[in-house]
Amino acid sequence: MKNITVIGSGTMGNGIAHTFAQHGFDVSLVDIDPGALDKAVQTITNNLDRQLKKGAIDPQLKTDTLNRIKTFTDLQQGAATADLVIEAATENRDIKLKLFKQLSDICDDDVILASNTSSISITQIAAVTKNPENVIGMHFMNPVPVMKLVEVIRGYATTDVVMQTVMQLAKTLEKDPVEVNDYPGFVANRILMPMINEAIYTLYEGVAGVEEIDTVMKLGMAHPMGPLQLADFIGLDVCLAILKVLYDGFGNQKYAPCPLLVNMVAAKHLGAKSGSGFYTYTPGSKELVVAAKFASKN
Ligand SMILES: NC(=O)c1ccc[n+]([C@@H]2O[C@H](COP(=O)([O-])OP(=O)(O)OC[C@H]3O[C@@H](n4cnc5c(N)ncnc54)[C@H](O)[C@@H]3O)[C@@H](O)[C@H]2O)c1
Image (cartoon, rainbow, N blue to C red):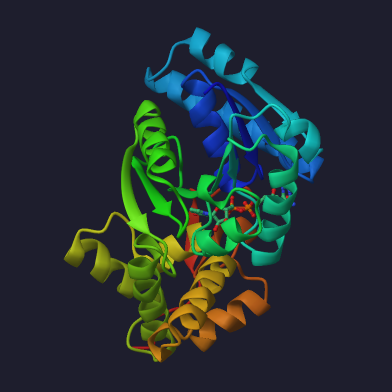
């Protein structure tokens, strides 16, 4: 396996492209938005510079990594020679189904088609392709170059050979893959999103303020960041989309998104990427939390 096509060059796509290229794969990065591709190459360059400064890579590896990444706005061109495709486009069922249908026509029959979806059914995605046995979930965590986990999701039709190939591939990237079955939210988001939703309910009901809730979880549960700040980093629209998948998939009221989350997304307060969520952010920077948006009611 040499040629990897990554579809979507946003938060996850640029990290996936970076990681594969750094490990010697040739990467075709595809996005419908040319501006997103430019931004992705800039982000990868900045992240490589950070690695270089820390002494984690040498200058040659930085150059080689960047040289291995080519960008495309045309799916046909970007995916034609792929040995493996990883789709990391916007978390929207219709977008993903359309993409996989197209990929199924563009790619050879034996090409593995993987999705980085956080919650959409791999089995449903596979069902629109000609070879559903070659479709699998490869759920990387953000930021991809740093986070060790890859949740590898076995769709209803995924074969053992495809599962083993992808597990091995993740190890080649120095990741720790974990195999899970295809049910709403898989494992990571089935557990994480109800916790985030409950933190938002705790705020909504006035039990405590943003910083108090996050502090309890950081200092009391040894979480590296609080659930509200994590929600801001994931994107509140992404959190809402995943909760809706859980709610629809299980038909259980316990996954109903908190009305405050629904309102914030409607108001386009999407977290760090929009500059405002539970905290406010310096535009363009995810790192600097300026101030908590909500004060404690007590
Ligand atoms: N953000 C996270 O923390 C996170 C973590 C794990 C998994 N995911 C999943 O990864 C995927 C991408 O999420 P993200 O946060 O990177 O989103 P994002 O909004 O940052 O980027 C999505 C990109 O996809 C592009 N796109 C949309 N339709 C396309 C198409 N038809 N063809 C090519 N490109 C297209 C958009 O232009 C955009 O650049 C989603 O499925 C999401 O659920 C996200």
